[in-house]
Length: 469
Image (cartoon, rainbow, N blue to C red):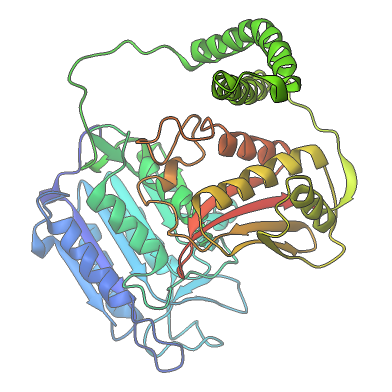
């Protein structure tokens, strides 16, 4: 089981429930199923024969789903895929997951919806060496939690379970979007591939990129469970794969980290001397010959830039070496935001939406570093209005920095936290080293939180800082 699945020995069952008598309709489900059918049968992705893919659109009852899956399970000897999109329901009596159909009732699921056990059993008895379940519904992560009770599909060798949400979370069908959030990301990756990955994509690579993208967009995070390392074998070709023209011996990450650390320390001594000279020049600035004054101004400003770069590199080496430390205190986050704005004279340019007080135990210096980077980034690259919003919850708080500009280019969005990355590569001399956002995220993670970037539907970028209280 090392190559791509053999489409002639594989079967796929796609179930889409979009219309309901007692539950809200889900119009995005129909495009989900149509797109997946096209993906699996296309020669570019999988080349599955059309008669090897069973599509059930709003099936009449649970037995129709069960019979279709039993038939596919009996025929598949390589790969068997079951996909469901619709409402997930929980049996109030047992807590088990059921897949809703047209006549399903939220409070009487046992005889009107498909019990998950009806999905598990045909897969368990199938001769297929790869068995994959994809559930795009609320509470779908519940089937992963069932493993400890002897009910989980993940106990079956050669299985992979991909769920749209955690066990107690709701799936998302964004208004105005063609697909549901989960399936939309899934089919996009199958169509477009994963940049930087190999020639063939594994389920784990697809899952990790889905999780990263959906999390960055603040959408429900998918869950997965792998049995017998099925997630590590090739699943589909990678359209984004770009082979290297010539083999290149790349230095290891540890080697690069040592180089940056050594270079930074070597720079500090001469830079200290240069800084002392520029400080003297700056004090005598009023008496300088007008002919040389512009050159002196340039030396002073560039020395400051170099100092900032070296300090940022020093901070990076501390993170890499694991020597960065927290000095926490009980602070008012709303007050810390105001201090950050006052210190940099940004008060007139930035609006603040925060309750007062917002108490939290954290490192105020590192919070200031994060805020300064996010706000300066919004002021430099976005457009007004720039707003800092603080939301407090019992165990966590969110700080959002919003702007009204054009947002971050889609191709740049996954890389904005990469070190030395600049979205506009045509401006290599632009202010900033490309380290600010990377350092901001490192500081957030050091405090047990995280930092995400996304574009707003109404225009502009949104950077979200999550911190535990």
